[in-house]
Length: 453
Image (cartoon, rainbow, N blue to C red; front, side, top):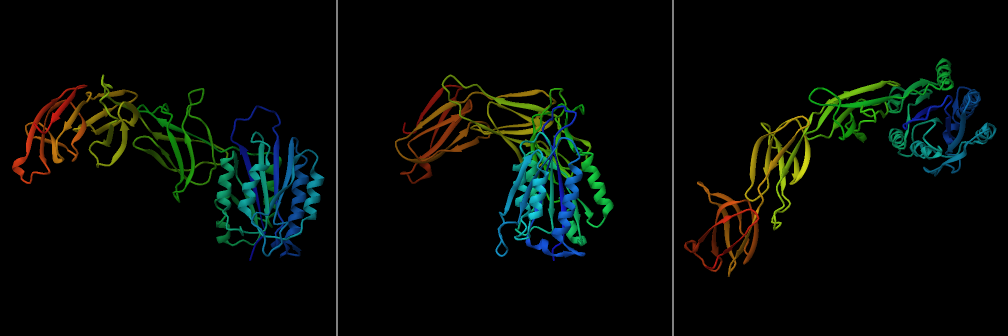
């Protein structure tokens, strides 16, 4: 069984509006003309009740200055069955002195098709000339989405197009479970509660289109909101679903930028620092400004080495892990680049040959910690036959560096130091035929080792 509901969507432009004494308010009516509107409610059909309410709303709102109206209708052209989930059309666009035309189109409406709520709401975003006015959508419908759509998802799409709205839902004979399905959409009011309808009309008349705003303070080590240029993601704290994403910035007054987002749901805000920092269970208040504080003190790690006069250096990566923690990789940084990290100590694994391990590298607030890595040297290995072997660092305990490949000509880039090669030709089937070559690698110098002498 379907039920008559009126969903009123209010939107507030997310862009900074110019200062005007009387800003324009644009109200788009989205009217349900689906077949189920024929069903009786009390002594009249749902569509008769809907039309009567519509006339009262538009006559009341027409008294307000600087107000423009438009009409979208759905379920009115394709008879059910089969119906059409794309059956939604802007019947009367925004303009002046079009009340009579809008009322006549509503009067002509005859219940015909099905109820594509999500599609109609999504399409409504394209009906507004711009996002600089106080944009409002009033959806008049008698039931739940019939085309498999999600009104909550449609609401999100409107927000992405710059229309932030807070709906009023007015329903008739809805069960508690049915009311819960609209929790993500807005506040519920009973259709038969005349006082509630009067209150809504008063809100519209007074244009109480309160903006729900927030700012994210990324705090430095002194708890000052001076960190910035960090990507942030807002998640639904209950479901974990993605909601919004922004790159944090400071405005021209060096204050965190103001964000216009919906006050529903409760959020988990993640700042994509390295490692991530976050704030859980953020609840915004409708029509108010909320400050969200996240500890995000950062410093800079700069790992570099000279290019070398012979350009022997390759693009080396640095694995960064948190000190005194698990061995999870936090980030892989490119050599000769700078990256920001949360203040603390880190272990570095620099993927040179041989690898360089640096533990407890300190990152301090707003400082650059520069790690200088010596330039590499070039090793060229030649042999008359394919073979097997490896390169060892010639230290007290002998450190394995890498295996040789089986070709007769090979090139490696090694850090300066003393090395040896242990190698055996594939054609010689005895370990006794292993040969050893010792050599020294110097920065920016090519060293050649021949395995046949």
